[in-house]
Image 1 (cartoon, one colour):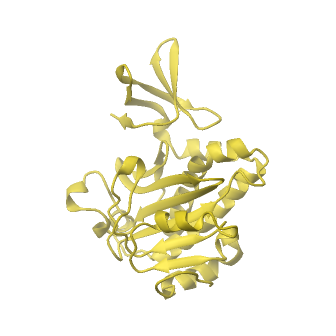
Image 2 (cartoon, rainbow, N blue to C red; image 1 turned 30 degrees about the vertical axis):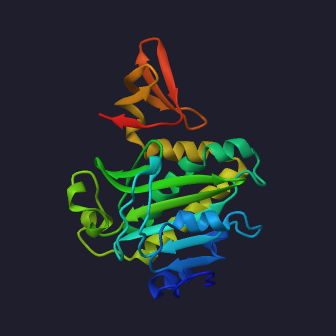
Image 3 (cartoon, rainbow, N blue to C red; image 1 turned 90 degrees about the horizontal axis):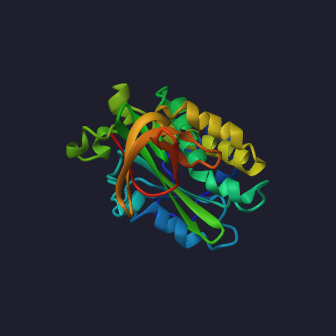
Amino acid sequence: MKSSRSDAALPPELADAFDRAGDRLGPFAGRICYFAEIGSTNDVAAALAPEPESFGTVIIADAQTAGRGRRGRTWFSPPASGLYVSVIVAPSRGAADPERATTLLTLATGVALAEGVERASGLSPAIKWPNDLLVGRRKLAGILAEAYGDSVVLGYGINIGPMAYPPELRDRATSLETELGRAIDRGVVAAETLSALAARYADLVAGRFDAILDAWRRRAPSHRGARVVWDTPAGPQSGITDGIDDRGGLLVRVAADRVERIVAGEVRWI
């Protein structure tokens, strides 16, 4: 397995799992950079994104000192406890519908992570719009997408062991090992999530958007019938989720005759 600009050799658990995955890794098999500890995998990927050959580059860290999630939140990233990955993609290049492929990228990534986790562990996490993986009401994984020109850095963190999150978050976070009651092979989780991402990315480029949206809806029970609150310039607004549209916007019914479409911002689930 090729490694580039890494500070350490790819650990055997990762190298062996990637070798077994073989062609299923698609564009993510060629350039894998591993770091024992780094500030943020997304930051390293962002520095590489302008390079002409950066597409498909994978950055993996055993620990992050400045991991982050959406809206500037810190992503707790201690060593040997989670899976911290960033990949460089370019959905606007060569896609049947570049604009829609870019719009649905985060949802496609959520589907892929859920599918990869299920293949690796047997656990089937739910998706909460737009990009969190949950078990019950506790967060298992998160996704952060950041655009750099026509490239997008997709970062994701998956809690593997219970040390992946602080004790005070125990009521809001969980891990694969906590849910399964046994150890889990991080290499297998890494390989299966990347191979699932390769397959769903192929769907995006080919314009198979209905397949992505249907899969997302099946794994997101709260996209209908859940009460949510979000902030507007006029103050907090609330309503009941009423599905997602064909571009991934969350639809919320706020009155019998009025539905709001949310595409960004913070949504709080009650």
